[in-house]
Image 1 (cartoon, one colour):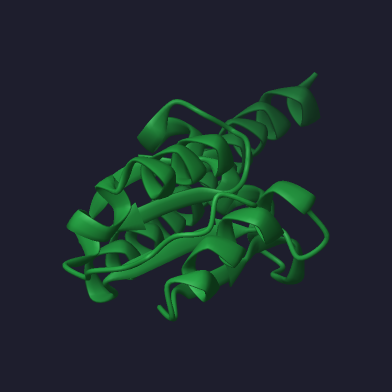
Image 2 (cartoon, rainbow, N blue to C red):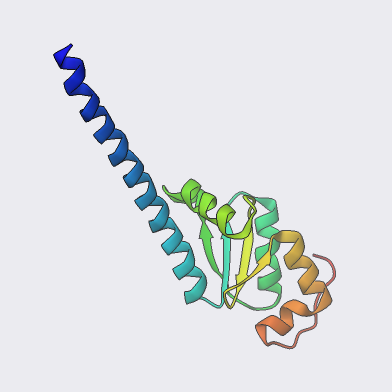
Length: 133
């Protein structure tokens, strides 16, 4: 009985430490995401194998713009970054595109903004675009 009494406070402490560590990890990913978005004109959170991500990246290539790309599948903390993005923008899918700190959306949103000319306006460039994307 005495050993059970001693184990309970230890168990409570372990659970509390685990929860604090998980919160710290989440806040470090949130800080990374926010800093990345604010530090670059164009940011794409992507997965290297994703065809929708490749399509969104292709838009910026067509516009001769070089985005800062975070390939979350190539990072150890990628799933945490994806969770953070989900909390931030309300979507878990990739790509997630940001211009000047503003969330543009995913692949379809980026293509639509490109085709309507809105993307060029946001980037402050004049372009002739290709409807083949």
